[in-house]
Length: 186
Image (cartoon, rainbow, N blue to C red):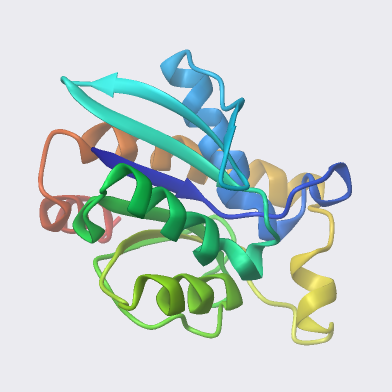
């Protein structure tokens, strides 16, 4: 079983913000697969699908992004999901908007949602897809990540999300190392 998690904040006021790119990407992938993320458990919304005979959960934690690890831990424990079968999709201030990067493991890079995931999983060794949202050093970080996306930013992020959807399709066909080789050098 695999668990794919999109990070974000619940509520209408956070839609179309930089911090919610994980939610947005998971929603688009669910739509592509023809499923809905409407089931509720452990303070998370999720959908289930079989891909090549393997059960896959698509999860949007409904705690605020900085508490995502608590929700993920509950799913991991309940479904007996291996850490190696978790993939987190999240925003990244250190990457330019319109870019992405795959990582097999690593530090939180200051992302409080990832810090909480590391705390609750007890490791930094989980896969992730980082989607760049750039950084505006003239604004407070909290105001920036919770700020609404401009039309130009939405256009760039839509292009990246299309690539991420292809990465997710390939995730079930090849190793993560092969994905990193194929997609991190574009």
